[in-house]
Structures are given as C-alpha cells and as structure tokens.
Image (cartoon, rainbow, N blue to C red; front, top):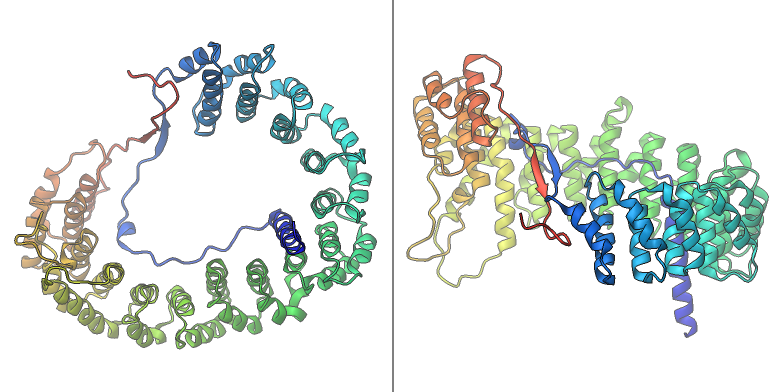
Amino acid sequence: MNQRCVIQSRRLLIVTLAVVLLVFGLSAPLHAIEADTVYPTDPGFATSPTVPGFPPRLKTLWLEALARPEVDNKRLAADTIALATQAGMPDLQDTAPRLIAELEAPKANPIVKLAAARALIALEARQSADVLMKHALADGWDLAQLIEPALARWKHGPMNAVWLKRLSDTTAKSRPLLLAIQCVGLAEVKAALPRLRELALDKKLGPDVRMAAASVLGRLKPEGQEADARQLAAGDPMANQVDHLVAAGLIARHQGGPAEQLLMRLAVDPEPAVNAIALRRLLELNPLLVEPINGQILVNPDANVRLLAVQIFLGQKSVAIVGHLGVLLDDPHPQVRRTAQAALIELAKIEALNAAVRETATKVLALEAPRGLEQAALVIGGIDHEPAADRLLQLLHHPKPVVSITAAWALRRLLVPATAAPIFEKVKADTEKSMIPLPLMTAYDMGAVSAMYLQHEHLLEALGLLRHREAVPLLYLFFPTPPVRLNPPDIRLDTVWMHELRIRAMWALGKIHENEPQAEVVEKLAERLRTYDNVYVGATCAMSLGRMQAKETLELLRKEFKPGDEYDILKFGCAWGVAKLTGEPIAKLVMKPTILSRSGWFLQSLD
C-alpha cells in the first residue's frame, strides 16, 4: 500500500473512531418543524394499533428442522429463530435447550454453531452463558466476536479474567485486543483501568487500539487523567492527531477548571474529530464556556461540529448567538440547518430573544439561498411572524419546490387575512391551467407538477381557515368523480382529480361555512356523500356537513354507521358529523388492531 493510501486509511480510521467516541451519551436532538398539513389532524382520524402476527406452527417446524441432520436446515432454523425473536414473536424461550444442544453437539458444523449462538443471544438466554463462553474461547474468531460482547452486556463474571489476560498479552493481535477493550468497557471491569491507560499512552500501538482504550478509560474513570491528556495534547496537532484524539477521549467525562481549560484547547484543534469530543463535553458542563470560540465552531468544516455548535448556541441563550443560528439555516448539511431552525423556534419562546429571532428569520427570508429560504419560512411559520406574509406570497412562485411548498405552509400557519385573495388567485390560475389538455408527447416537468399538488394542499387549507368565500365556486370543481381513463387520450394535469386536493377542497368548504349552512353547499356535500368514490371523500363531506350544522342531513349521516360498528374512515367521519349536529359524544366504534403478518418464513405452514 502506498503512502497516500496509508494516510487516507489512517484518516478514515481516526474519523470513524472519533464518531464512536462522540455519539456515546449524545443528548436527544431538537425536533425540527416539518411542513405538515392540517387535514389529518382536524378532526383527526384514528389509526388502529398494530400488532405483529405470525403464522401457526412456526416454532414446531423450526424445532423439527433443528433435529434434522442436514446442516442447512439446522442453520436456517436457528437463524430464523433469531430473526423471529427480533421481530417480536413470543414464546420462543423454550427453544434455548435445543439450541444449546446444537452448540454442544459432537462434530457440530461451525456454521450451525454460529447460528445457534446468534439465536441464543437474540433470545437473551443467559442460562447459556457458560456454554457460550466455552465456545467463544475454543471455536475461533467468528464465534468470539459474536459471543463476547453479549457476555459483557450480561456482566458474565468468569469472562473478566479472560479479557484482563488478553489486555496484558503484549503479543495479542489487534482484533482480539480491540474486542477485549470493548468488552471490559461494556462489563465495566474496573480492574482493567491500569492496563487501559498503558494501551492509550503507548505510541507504538495502532491508533485503533489507543483510541478505543482511551474511550473506555474515559468512561470508566471520569477523573484524574488531566496530566496524561495535557502531555498528549502538547505536541504538534498536525503531527500528533492520534495523541490529541486520545487526550480528548481520556477527559471526555471530566469536569473542573483544569479539565475545562484543556477541553477548550482541544475544541479548536485542527482536527474536527478532536473538536467534536471536546465540545460534546463542554456542552454537557456549561455551554457558556464555549463563548470565546463561538465564531470558530460556527465555520468549522465538519458537520458534526456545527451540529454541536447549534446545541451550544441554544444553551447559551443570548442575543448574540441568534445571528449565528441564522447563518446555519443555510448550512449545507440538512441536519444542521434543521436543528438550527428548531433552536431558533425554541429561543423565540424567551421574551428577551423573541425580537432577535424574528429579525434574523426575516433577514434570511429576504435572501435567495433556497436552503435558507426553506428553513427561514419554517421558522416564520413556527413563531407566527405575520409581517413576513408579503415575502412568503412572492416565494409561492419560487422555482425551487422546497421553497414554494414551504412558503405555502407558512402562509397557512400565519393566516393573515390580506393573503386570502392572492392565495386564491394562485390556486385558481394553477387549477385552470392544469385543466387544459396538452398535445400528445408534450414534455413537462413532473417534479414541478408534483410540487404544485403539494403546494395546493396547504393553500386549499389556508382558504378554508381564512374563510375565503370567493373560493367556493373554485372548490366545487373538485367534486366530480375523476374519470377512470381519458378518451381520446390526452395529457391532463388536473389538480381537481387529485384525491389529496379533493378532500381538502371539501374540508375547506366546511371551514368556510362553519356553523353557517348554505343550501347549495349542503346539497353538493350531501350528494357527494351519497355517491362517494373514495372513503376519505365521503368522510370529509360528512364532517363538513356536521361542521356547517346542516341539520337536514342528520339522517343521511346516521345511515352510514351504528354505534359498535367496526371502525373505518367513513363511519368515523359520519359519527363525528352526527356528534357535531347533535352535541352528543362521538359514537364509539370498535377499533380492531391491524395484524402485521410477515410471510416467507423458513418452513412456514401452508394452513
């Protein structure tokens, strides 16, 4: 391998191991706002609980296969027991004795042993720990790397001596040594601490061993390692990347002045992997410690570091960092910019920061960067910043779908009365254009067409929530049943045939005329309920009739269900409508669980 490949491989190893060090103990991420729609939650359709289902006699068939002499049958049966356990199949614990017997069988095939061990581990069959240990030590690397971490998680004490002996073996190869390091960490074997320190500090060892040892040592002994870390961090950072990463790992759980000072040094190390570990700990200790280097972490080339920067800025809760988060709304990495968006919405809840968040989001919304426009629009909608409505109307025509759709969502969130007419004109123009047949073989941008459909979901809801009566004739266009086929064939992009838009048009009519029944609207909704072509269409018509207080349709709604019926969308819509018309509680419908039955199991019964 040439020198360049060696350097690249080492770099990849450092980054990979650093990520392992970083993710340990990460706090729960912020939840970014998504451009969702109102209809599914107003009034809200129930979803049946799901339960896993399994065909009959699976376990019996698998046990019979384990008893057969064929190697493939044994292997497949054991592997399937492991898969079924992970899929939630109950009552498989009693397969453990048969699996142990296969593992212990004289002259058992190594493939069968591996499958049996895997199944026992999936079953959490801790009664098999001694047997598993015996085979981990006697039957080679494949079994060892499978079994030993499980024994470590189970805190199987007899293995501690094995791992400690391997750690002390100066002739041990890298893979078994790394496995022992991993396992003493999982089992929390404090007796390994002195040897872990030696491994972490030994510059003759490979970076994988040193960094793994430092990671485990840092977790098991979260104090007293500042001196070692300081010495390692003193060298040239470009020539001693591994030393710096080991230093960060050693103090990744430390606290106190000396540790904080060293963590601050490592937080601006030229190696982003080192920065990430140090910043993670500083975030846990006190985000305000990082203020002197805010500008540096804001522009760090590594997305993991910038993601930590967002969390640090959120923790600092100052006006100064609101602008930093605004910059990150246009970050190249989607998780960074979404987290920045969520952080700004969270900070807007603080009275002293609310104005700064609004100003920052408005500034980003005035730019032309599509990524930033999307996230700024989400912030604007999330904090209900009505002065941005005019800019959002402009962005309805943006060429990037992610911007035009999000702008529509934000307008639906703001519900500024003055936007109703422009929204209506946009929907009307698009709808009329979509109904014009195109010549055969016409090329068109399907992505743009799909974006129009998604945008109209938000805009139709906005027209309903804004109660824009001028939209009623347009909404009627969505009532006819879509044709099965066109004759003669032509290309039509009709928004009025899209079910997701049709149900929102009918939903919007109920909102526009809420508590104000209009004879023409009632007649159209009632007729559409009688002849519904889609259960969501029928359910939405029923709910809109109830919302409008169309008392004359009460019997029509009652015809579609009776209390105690099994739940479906249409019955629920009618029950909800009846409840609105009568003031009674919504009639109870039986919600049966949905059985998610997986097929294709090894040796599945045909019954």
